[in-house]
Image (cartoon, rainbow, N blue to C red; front, side):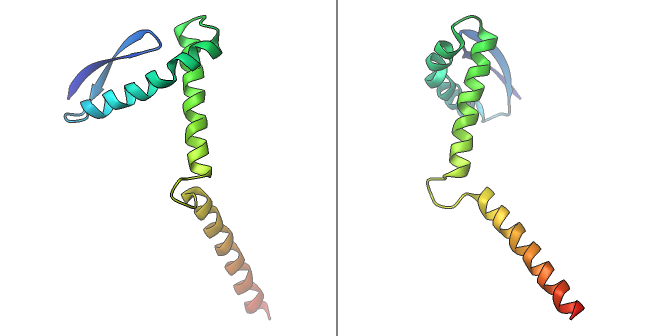
Length: 100
């Protein structure tokens, strides 16, 4: 297992990484750094912890948007909800048919 240091919100953190995942973690670090200035402005630049909270909120908002409106079509989350409802309807219809 490898250990790398990433920098987020002006602080350095040692992170354990599976062998071969170092480049992926560097890519994730660059994504965090892309949004770091916005998070610092939103937090008022008071401290790194507050900046990290805003950074987490920015990223959570991005994940939520992709889950609700995926670029390739219908959201897997939406499809799962539709499937659950269809199963509930099918069960109700089967129960009605059995009672008749």
